[in-house]
Structures are given as structure tokens and as C-alpha cells.
Length: 352
Image (tube, rainbow, N blue to C red; front, side, top):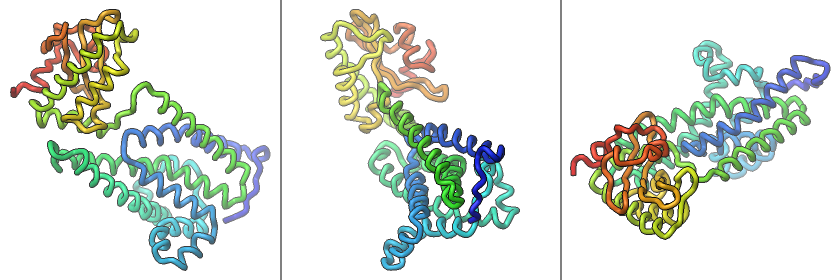
């Protein structure tokens, strides 16, 4: 690579490029952390980290790989990444930021096509990790109520999200590190890495401070599909869970200002739900009670998504409530996207 030592103060274009990369490194970790919480994208993150580590370590990984065939097999794609960028400098930053929108150009330009296939090579490695993870998830988290037809859309969505993550976020990050390292702009590299580390730490701290565990998109889809696939069993589990929580709640003087119930009632309700739902699916459910001082109504619900009705059961003075008009309006506000006409009986267990 060329040893281009233009300074920030003497080159407005260099300053603008550096500030754009700095802003990207400050904002991208939030999207990456969110994607990692909602979808299984760990394979892509590991692939990019490994490729950059091999690049920054220089010849050492290549010498180790030459001596040990298993290491060479594991590092093959990362070594291809290293070889490509040792020979070819990355393009301008704006090109990689807009990369997903330049799909026709990849087919037209020979060098762009070569770079795309190089990235596709180590993306396939992340796909292999992802598919192995999804296969394990299918047997551990989807079966027995849900079959492959239910599972296949989750696989396709996970692949699409991971591909978009690689092309829109990880590729600009990787090429920035390569460019600054190869052109000996070490101070700029340290600056953007520091900003990226601080931004990632802040994003992770926000996740850890969240009042409830973050439930992934696929987990919420499993809750919906599993409930629809076995409505009678779902109703029994939900009814038992809300009754367990009610016995705990009568021992408590009141609930939080927004009506949300936490602590032992919620923990016991989620534990009871595991008689039917998977462990991570139980965290999709919450409790809401009213009035706050001496609750008479208790609702166990999973929040609705994409204008779908929520899944809920409720008790009023210890007896089951099945009609929405018997619940306070605050119950539906807690369920967010629910409407007063939502019919729990028709949605969940009308086949009883």
C-alpha cells in the first residue's frame, strides 16, 4: 500500500474523510449490538474480528498456518482477506458505506467483483457457523410443537440480516482499519478504535441496564407460533402461571407506578410457563396489575408485534377474565399494540 502521510490540517478532504469514519465508528456499534441481541449474527462478528486480527499480526499467522494444516484450514478465509488487502488498497470510505446499494456495479467492474467474492468467501464461513447454530436451535428450541416449515422463514431472515450486517456495517469497519494500518496513519486508527470501543461499551451498558432481558425477534415469533400450534396446552400453561403470580401478588401491598409487576410474582410466573414454553420464550411475558395500591386485576401477556393481537390471560379477584371489556384500559396500554376489541378467546384458544 502507498505510504500516504497527508495530514488532517493540510487536507480538507482528509479531514472530512476522518470525521466521517469517526462518526461511523461512533454510531455503528449501536446497530451491531442491537442486531446481535435480536438475531443470531455472532458468526459474522467472529469472522470479521478474526480477519482483522490476522491482517494486523502480519506474517505470524501465515507462518503458523504453513506448519499446521488444521490452523491453515481454520484461517484460510482470513488469510485470503489479508492477501487481498496487502496487494490492493481499499477504496474510498463512501464506497463501502453505500456498498449494499451498488449491487449492479459489483457485476460490471472486474476488481469490484473480485472484492465482493473475497468478502463473500468469509461471509460463507459465518453462514456455516450460523447454520450450525440454527440446526441446534431447531431441535432444542422449536421442536416438538413447531416443524421445519415454521423454522425455515427464521433461517432465511437470519441469513438476510447477517448479510446486510456484513455489507453495510462490518465491511466499512474492516476496510477502515485496513486503510489506516496500511497507510501508517496509526494515530487516526487508534482514535477511531477508541471511539468504537467507547461506543460499544456504552451500547452494551444500555442493554445491561434494561429493566427486562431483551427477547430476540425469533424468540417472540416462536412464542406466537407455539401458542397457535397448541392452543389448549398454551392456555393451561398461561392460566397456571397467572394463578401462581396471583398467589404471590396478594402478599404484596402494591405495584409500580405504571402497573408493571416484577420480583417474585413475575419470576414464579415465568418459571411456571416453562411447563409449555421454552426458557427464553418465558421472558417474552410480563405482568400488569390494577389498581396499584391493592390490585384486583392481574394480566399476564406477551407484547404484540406487527399489528398482531397480544397473547394474554387475566384474573379479576382471582377468577379468569376472558372478555377485553372487563379489563381496565391500562392493561391494553401495557400490551402496547392491543386494541379494546382484542378477543383473547378467539386469538388463543377458540378450539377448546
